[in-house]
Image 1: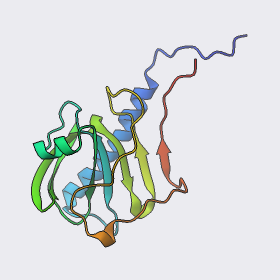
Image 2 (image 1 turned 120 degrees about the vertical axis):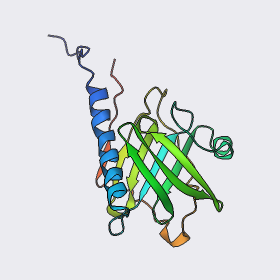
Image 3 (image 1 turned 180 degrees about the horizontal axis):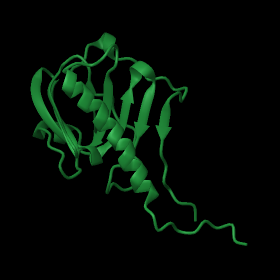
Image 4 (image 1 turned 45 degrees about the vertical axis):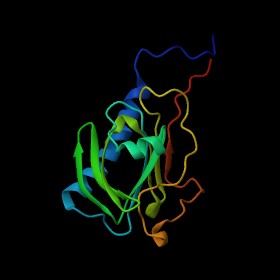
Length: 163
């Protein structure tokens, strides 16, 4: 009997990634519907800036050529959520900007208020996502909380195959 796992003909990794991205969409749709974040909830969303469908101002694309983290907390507007992504207005250095981000480009979704985190492989991206600079949109310093490193409520999906 062989101990080698046979190659799956069902794309489980893609199905799970899609289901977890639906969590992000559902959470953002609720914020869009109510127009506010409940309680102390706020979100750090990291995404690949070069993915198809990402639309960000040129100065941000130059500053963040690969990956960018945004904060949805105090200063955001016009949050619109579609089945395949979202758009939101944020301020960077006092300059208002609108960003469009497909869910396929999202690599991290964190709600530090409840130590919740989802990590994704950006669809079509090679390799694991890299460490990145902190979020760059305008956020009050007192609101920039550290995410707990104890791993509580963290869902990490790693689909690297053993060979």
